[in-house]
Every structure is written in structure tokens, then in C-alpha cells.
Length: 111
Length: 110
Image (cartoon, rainbow over all chains, first blue to last red):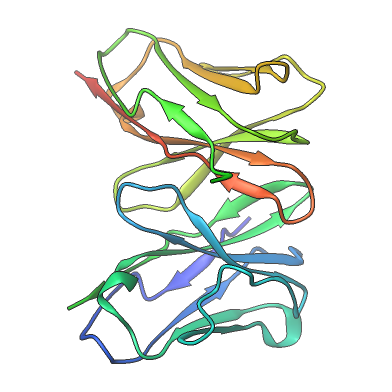
């Protein structure tokens, strides 16, 4: 069974630029999550989708972050404009029957 | 913060020794999960223990859960250099209440 796919794996941008991350969950997993993991910390939930609907985006900085999951499969997370403090690993996960399965993450560096 | 606390923050042991890390949390939960994260990689799901379970085994992993103390422990027996990673607990209280702990960085010295 293929795992959660994410791209790109690494991204370096300058502050105030825009960036987008892509996630393809495990086939059949209706729930998809985006997490932000700052170095040395545990992952923090940004947004949760159930199929193509948003379940929880309470911790998403909506002035600069946006996410969508068209057709209830793939998802994209966008940051516009990026700030220095956005430097982190962005993890996508999908779940089925309680267990969450994570992708390899995208490491973002904002200079 | 609803995030769990893990201790120790860092642990260094010799290959072959056992490694124990602990997780404490604040609210009632449906289940607790442990994950491993190698440097620069995504999180790998290790084991899930439900609130009505007290102990669970998977290979060299042993997880305990004490809901009265709101704590869990992860024991890795006969550690190997490949076990070097960060280990996170995550509590699932149902709905959207899923939170990761702060992590324990384990180094196994060959």
C-alpha cells in the first residue's frame, strides 16, 4: 500500500514570497490533516479535512495560510506571504479507523 | 496548553539496553498513540493503545497506559542504533482533540 505522498520535500524562499505544498493521502482515507512542526517541537494541527470539507481550521493563520482539498483527495497548503517564523516542516497525514499516517513532510526555510 | 509532556526530553543509551520514555497528558482520552520520527523524516505510527487497555506489545515495543494518572510509557527493549530517533506520544480525545507531546530524543550508541 502506498503511503502519504508530499511534494516538494524541501523549499527555500525569501520572506514575503509565496509557497505551496501538495499532499496525496492514502487511497480511501477520507480524513486529511496538515500539521506544522517547528524544530524541537511536536507537530501542531493547522487544518483537518473530512472529504472536501473543513472540520477544524481553528489554528490556521488565515491571514496568510490557505488550504483546499478539491474532490476530496489531494490537498494543497499555501502560504502567502511567508514570514521568517513559518520556517518549519509541514506534515500531511491521512487517517482511517483512528490511526494517522504521515507523509515525509516538506521542510520550508524562509530567509 | 493541551499538548502532552514527555520526559525525558533527551535520552542516550548503549545498544542492547532498554529505553523508557514517559508521556503525561491533561484530559480524558479515547486512545493514545506513539510515533517515531527520524531526523528530517515524517512521523511513523508505532502503536495505539485504547483507554480501556493497560498494556500493549508490538515486537520490541511495550506501551502502558494509566488513565488514573493520565500517563503512558513506551519501553523499547534491546535497543539498536537504528532506534535513534525522536519519539512522540499523541492523545486522541475524540472529535478534533488530537495533540502531540513535546517528544523525547533517543540516541542509541553502537
